Length: 366
Image (tube, rainbow, N blue to C red; front, side, top):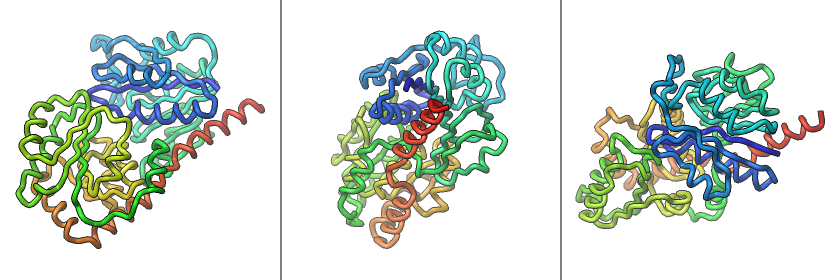
């Protein structure tokens, strides 16, 4: 089975789309598939990392603002060119040999791009979170908690197979393993994990979160802080960490499972790591950092699996108060942890790749 992924990472987009595609590619490769990636050379692309994992990564030309055309897609600018140019360039690098699957994970691509790529593959899979555009795909994955077939009514073909909900979240197998092996949490908050995604963190929410723990009543808490390569405040962060003490800064980790297992509380964005935290029952203060995280934040708030904030809130006061509340109210702490674990069991990756293989076998058998 030959599979091509079309996805991007950048300082604006972040790293989540590429990382979940890599997780799926690893699983498919384990089942004998040959996988390759097509990515544009945005600032902050991850093609070196993709290649280091043993995949061929075709580089599309750097973004060209002059080639952007008007589009009704909210995230059209994330592509760096117009969709027709992207489709033509993708077809060119993929060559003439027919693929079994093209898997597209990109908010700036829709049914028009997918239709243009139809001739080069047997099936198309779209990974989406937004339900804000039409798709011409055979398989749709929306791994967000609370997603449903109704959300995509009129947006996908009638015969499209749809996988919805966090039970299909593309987590590395290590998370299910850690979930099975981890000890029961103590209920004490002695170590906090701070991570606002692998992008640039333009609002410097990382630095803000660290400042909260300068409060005298929180100085005995150990901190693990992860920042991406595009984070532009690292020197200031390191100085503040050194001044505070008990603060460890990490970059380029293969995954966050070890730090999440050790942590008693997480503070971070509402991206893909939401499902990793849920899998391990890690109580979380979730800050909605982008429009595409609004639905995730609301679902987590309603479930009771996280305390949800927005940048417009008085974040420093709220984070301090919630941390203190959870450290003194063990009943609330364990309730949040248990509700989080109900949302994700870490086995979504297996469910997704088995569906891909099953659909391929149906095609092969006519």
